[in-house]
Length: 117
Image 1 (tube, rainbow, N blue to C red):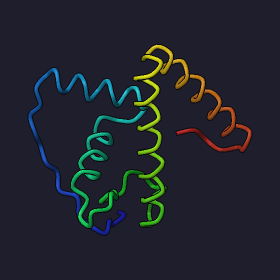
Image 2: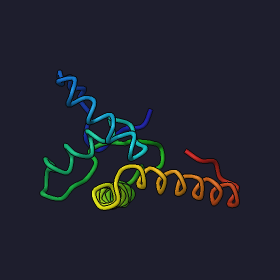
Image 3: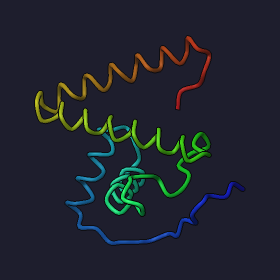
């Protein structure tokens, strides 16, 4: 079992159905789980040293703090761009861009001989 620098403590909250729908929609649009979206938002807002960082492991690839920071920065940049696109060109065009990007990324990973996530 992998240990993390800071222990993660499960915390349960009740959300209004409309809020939950918005969170799930935002997570789907960003191709991440609602749990990871909520974790990223909370971490960005309440990061301990004033700098956003993930408190614990999200997957097997981010075992070092520098990788955590890179993952966070990539995720934040991706979410920012998607939010900007959604507001400037609309959700339908953003969905098409996201789908095309996903397909291109999968083809690229296949050419490298790597599995997609």
